[in-house]
Amino acid sequence: MARPRSEEKRDAILTAAMELIAEHGLGAATAEIAKVAQVPHGSVFTYFGTKSALLNELYVELKTELSESILEAMPGDGDVREQLHHLWGRWTDWGVSNPPKRRALAQLGVSDQITETSRKAAAVVAGPAVEIVDRARSSGALRDAPLAYVGALVEAMAGTTIDFIIQDPGNAERVRDAGFEALWQAIS
Picture 1 (cartoon, rainbow, N blue to C red):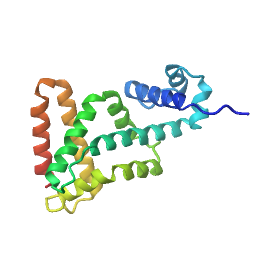
Picture 2: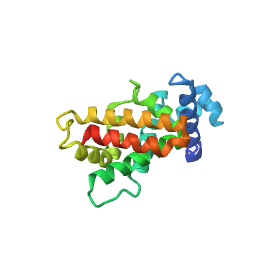
Picture 3: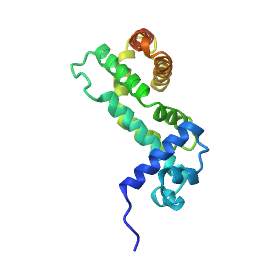
Picture 4: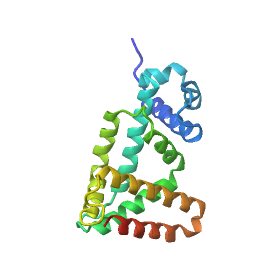
């Protein structure tokens, strides 16, 4: 009879994969992931089946964590600028506080190993945040642009802002505010 799977081992494998992908890229070997997770190499495949399945699970988990962080305590009054400002602040805070997760997510986001099913699952969780961006751009210059394009612009602006905050934390507030104003002007 097979032993029941441990949530702790599963989480250790995901954390190890995230750390190694952030540091070494998507070529991180499953043997190294197992070593860092302190589990037998075969456990990676017991829990995830394939490396691709592991990468997809990690992608969805990181996107979910980011989306939940963004949406936490979202102002509900419907003022789109205030909601977008909240989204921006939470996103940049998450990125600055979680550099390895951000680096791993960036690599996973451009990987051809991430399936359409995983991308759709992540999009469902991010739906309320995407809706805010969509409302913000509804009367601006980007109103007719594909929403995926607008989302990519927002993501690029957030990434650039996060990078500059990490490089110069003494100017974090100024950079975050300038980034938001640039975002607002670009999409509204």
